Length: 176
Image (cartoon, rainbow, N blue to C red; front, side):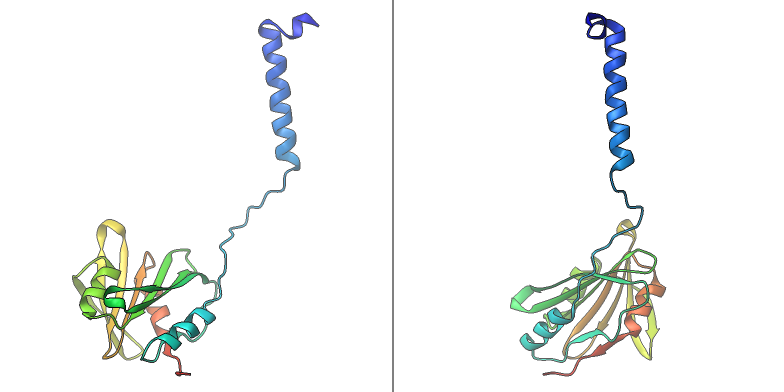
């Protein structure tokens, strides 16, 4: 018995026993190869936001195929304005965040959400012009739309096409 507890053979046996136990654990432990992104319903957050602001709220009219809504919250912006944040994992598994507020000045709000104050062009979506912004170091693309009563911002690592797809499904929700 003593030869298994000392020297090289003892070390080899202990190592074999440990590797065997680890292998057995890996063999019987459940494993999932599927991606799991938690899906969070944003409808109640949008409704609550609509009750607290003096304008018609914008929200997606439907969920896009293979997109996962994964975050939502209402926050306080500058000057006490409320800000709605809706986050999504896109079909290409990039990140997209939709943000809206009546915060003033509107340009300051858009700059903060886009992490940029420089327009790099525009994009037409459903007859509406959206201002494009791009921040190279973060690979962050942003679409901004300034309306009389609210500023809409769609931002994230998603490409311009996915940002446009999301902008196309936005619609005003009836007050109520």
